[in-house]
Image 1 (cartoon, one colour):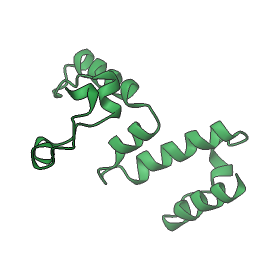
Image 2 (spheres, one colour):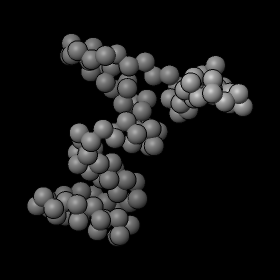
Image 3 (cartoon, helix red, strand yellow):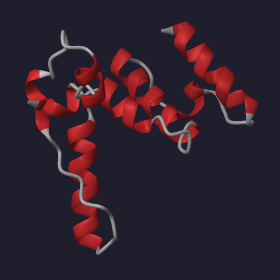
Length: 111
């Protein structure tokens, strides 16, 4: 855990931010996970990888529900996102790949 904190502090030091211990509670592994998730959200905000973080952390459904709720509550214009359950975790094989290789079959959730 100390190594992870040191790495996050190294990123924060680049822009003159205080060390994690000065502003966050990281006494537990879960607390440190929350800090790292927040750091990634802020530091990499416009890098186009947030969606993949949400997939990896199994947090996509919560994010989709929150976005849809905020959009309708505040009258914001968003493209409504339909959460597809298990299909979100397994992507389809492109049809052109299936057409070019007769040994391939579409993933069962996408048939």
